[in-house]
Length: 436
Ligand code: PA5
Image: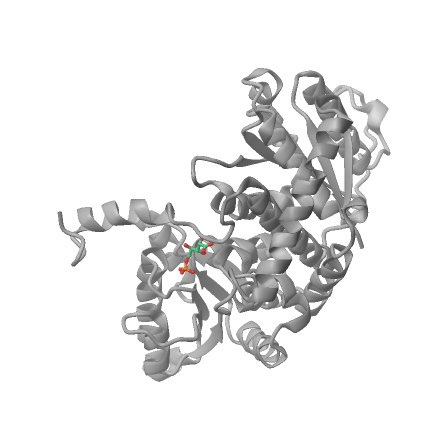
């Protein structure tokens, strides 16, 4: 297993001297990760997690997932930000965007608490009518408004349907372990819900390989042991010196482009199953780097779909972005373009060709065009869309993000800016303690 980094479409945009000049910075970024980890500073629990995760908790997750798979048709995962994106990204990465329709056993999986839109909530509640439901509410702080509202709705639904005692068997809570008044943990203890822990030293956006992500992922039927194995392989792979360390090299290159005036990093994939991975990356990098007036703005796209929307801008708009293109060596399936009696659609030249051949050339044609149009492209290639590769990729991006944050001179683990909208919203809503 590996992630390969190619700079074929990026090299005309920097000199070797510029690259070499940043190597000490990249090494310092990695050193900072190690130093903070060794001193137990900063929430760096994710750094050693693939090796030292709590085996007993992991076994409980597997048990709970088995029970959920056997007892419901709909599984609603309630959470937002880091308490949502990783699980959904993993499920779509491993099982594709149609996982709910194609799953042979186990429940359909839906996500709630990701907005405060009553229409979305109404429709999800409707979708649960007449079906057996289990829920997993996930919130590290245990006080976030969006999931709190959704949890209130689904808890009431379960209590009406199964009675208070019956509902308890169907409610699973993932939160901080400390019982504080007015938090989800206090409620979980009071009601006796089965609870899983978000480790204190792992922040939301770095938590996909904890119970936060692992319970929903296991309910999907994905192999979470293989996922942790992939992450452990990445932990071993990115311990090495700069010259062999793709993680540090990627952090260096994105920092180099930033210094040269590229303000946007566009994560592009040619695989629709990567759509939520793009969302997860936006949160990981946006929240980790966007502060103190600094940071690359992360955006994501699925090609070739978005070549028919964003493509024009990427090709000819402001020259302030670079692309990080995520590819796979092997597709999940082979799919040959069928032969037809007529050539009215002009596709005879592709008959019998695998779709992977078309996708590969769509990528090369686009990367060349974007390069020629002034958009550098870094290419990261994974083996295939499976659990091991997801775990490997998660660890790669988490570590590269921490190194990048330290290179930029920001704290990659806080998110003070997230509070600003909440204060205004709470004041406007009349929340006690937030009046003018
Ligand atoms: O990365 C983060 O810390 C945030 O995006 C959180 O995950 C998000 O705000 C949800 O917070 P919580 O899990 O406390 O409900």
